[in-house]
Length: 137
Image 1 (spheres, rainbow, N blue to C red):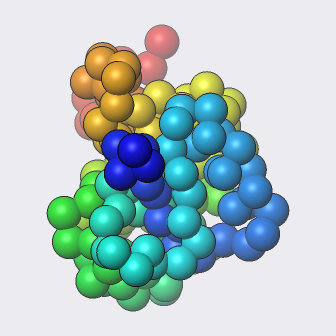
Image 2 (cartoon, one colour):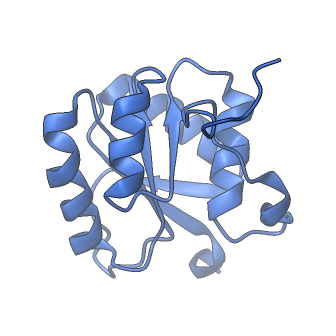
């Protein structure tokens, strides 16, 4: 019955990030793959980028490995320029590492089919800049 378990693929990142994500994803019932699965089935692709130069290459690789899976870009901090670029290049969402893990859980649930009503958890994970003209209270 493992075919019903959602699977996420991590591109980029080190062993420490992989371990952290594995723990968070396991709590949500999502298996983390550190290399492309042989059957090609991936429900979500997480792309870790440090700088903008590697972003386009990493997003292209994510699409090659899983054309239909949503892509979430993990950035080291809420870099508005990098987040905007990621979204323009096709990322479904972004998450700034260092934010509370509860926000990461909401971002993941918003993009992976599961028993919870994921649509209720649409979140930017604190990485997407506010819309122009929105009040900052």
